[in-house]
Image (cartoon, rainbow, N blue to C red; front, top):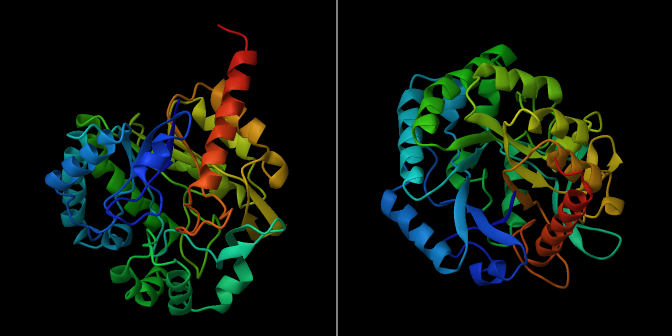
Length: 359
């Protein structure tokens, strides 16, 4: 297992590589080239410069999060083949800088959504929050405007300006698509891309839908145990696997997160783990919290133990953190709370490992 931290390159982050290097137990970062338009090839020279910058700080670059998928692929349009070809070329380029895992998602239109990027918790810290009714009261333009206005000047992956202009039309498009058609488009993508992942030794790790319930009638695929089983059956390659995000799946109170982790980690097809806690105020109303089990609804001990006991040997990152101690940073991605979370998770892992019977 390797503990890593998400970091945004090109001056698009308040957190520095030097600061990350000082977090005990953190060996590397998951990052991306956020300025490359969706669907274009990530240039080799840019990737080499990114690798060299990260290595110079004493950190590893083995995980990319993420190479976003062009909407035409999700829609199943004839133009998808061009964008899939570009995606495969990007996979080849990533392999040349030592990337081993690619986290991505197949969520239509909106990669993720929150109704509040700075909800005030009882202790005075702030965190991202979601209220389903509040989201439905806003039209897509209003959501986009709110997300960008609350971003503190940082980019928000999945909310790129070129995508926002088409949001309403894209939502309308999906109203005429069945779930089976959407699954077919996902399979088409996998069958085209996975051979390149195999060739270049990069594990493809799909991220769950966030939130895991539908907004504006948009299709959801990676949101519960049944759909995850279906996804893995679409392509049986060991290079087709999961980023298992406890917070995203835990947003649906019907999901038993430790059980989901146990089932899929035991198959060897979980390559990346995002571990965070959330607290429900109502069924579809929740706030993100500190990682500690007592701060939210998820039992972090059970979650980490499920990964450990089922042979997980991939990458873990402490997921979204709160804003604490006056820090001003990209929502969810400050330094302090994620550093605390990383060491809490490392502490759980060490305790579980040392107390487990050795085989």
